[in-house]
Length: 116
Image (cartoon, rainbow, N blue to C red; front, top):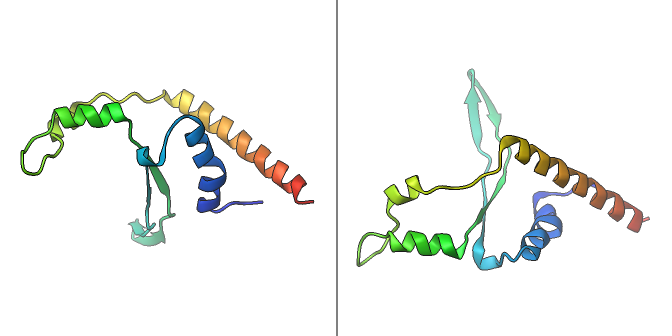
């Protein structure tokens, strides 16, 4: 059984995020329209994708301590550009993807058997 983006988000991604303590106020979902790109003179449709922005209160508080402007406070771009962000190594990212793919496959098999 294949899932569309909304089903994947509802059945797999959101429950995992909520289980880790993220709430809807900390999660922003942005969906791209896809669009058309040209490469070597040929046009092709780019796939739609969904990005998840996970906001931690500590990050918001840090940004607000570095804000500029009094009437309309906004983040200081220099502080944002110099902010350290931890990301897993590429090898670790690949390992995470493998784990998620295994779980997706298992979930698909379980649903298949439940629907029989």
